[in-house]
Structure formats: structure tokens, C-alpha cells
Length: 113
Length: 115
Image 1 (tube, one colour):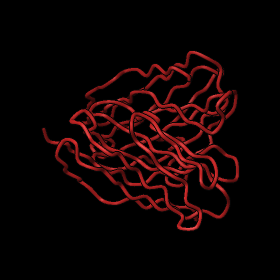
Image 2: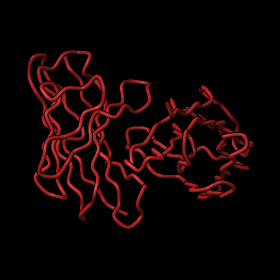
Image 3: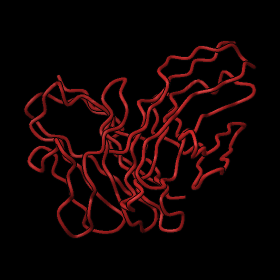
């Protein structure tokens, strides 16, 4: 079945460091791909999305490109801040149109000042 | 984007009791989902809340344990019944926006602790 594999955390970085969180997926169709962020004690917030191959989603300095050939959607940010400390989830939407999501296991990011 | 209000934000319950969680959306939405997030884990879909009919449950989740209602297009409740410590989790509702289809918006979650 469809699945999402996300790099394990926690990831600890110094402020202004470069961030990459890897995400790969398996899907039988053409899903949309998402990154969600969960700050401590809060629900999930949509960070960015891409709906087709080669699309680049971006928001708040974060970027991810839908790579069909490598079935990947890696999250990147050029310079992280302490306020970026959170758990990041990669997800895909069910290609069959049920609107259900499949989530990765989440990656905890800790940014040190 | 849809704005979701989820209540209560947290609760501490005794084993054997039940907790009902409410999810209110500020606009009509097509799909509403309920998820469980166990400590340090990812989200697991419990069920799809269907307006005016029985919810559709995922494998491993049953109506007797997780009864769900959705009387209209903007409101749903999830009850977690006969609580045990293993039910201690965060429960989240999400909705699919009518306009930006395929995007789910999440409530802030209900943090449940069972003693």
C-alpha cells in the first residue's frame, strides 16, 4: 500500500544552520504531497504542499520539490531559527480521491541559539 | 482556510469513564476526520465522520469504542469509551476545505490522560 518514510529524529541544529529533512513515498497513483508542522502543545499546521511532479512548495523560508523520479519530497531551509523548533510531518494524499492522508512518523527539530 | 475549534483542549479521566470531544468548524466542509496521536508517534486515522450517517472506521477502530456523530456539515463529536491508560493520546479532528480541496486543516487537539 501507499506509505511515507521520513528520516528519524531528533535533529539538532545551531541557529542559522541549513536544514534538510528527508521524505520519500510509495504510491500507486499521483498523490499530492504535504509538509505539516506541529509546535509544542498545538495541532498540525500546513507548512507547504505540491500537487504534481516538479512542483515546488514554499513557505516561511521552507521549500520542498516534488520529485517523481526519486519519489521524494525533502524539506529544506537555508537558515533555521530557534522558533523553527517543532515536529515536522511529511504526508501524502490518497490518490484515489478519498482525501485521506498517510503521514510519516514525524521528525523532531531542535534549534539551539 | 477553515478555522476549527476543538474542545476540550485537555482532560484527565478515570479509567472506565468516557470522554466526548467536540469539533466545530466555521464553514461548511466536505470531509471531517478524527485522528489519534499517541505519545511521540505519528497520526493514525480513526475514522471519517459522515454527515447524517454512520462514520467509516479504519482497521483496528470500532464504533463501540469510538462512537462518532456528525449531525451537520460544521460539527462532529468523538467519544472515547471505557477509557484505559492505553487511550492516553492526543485526539485531533481535521477537515477538508471545500475550496482548497485535498488540503486538511487541523484542530489544536485534545490531550487526554487516563489514570
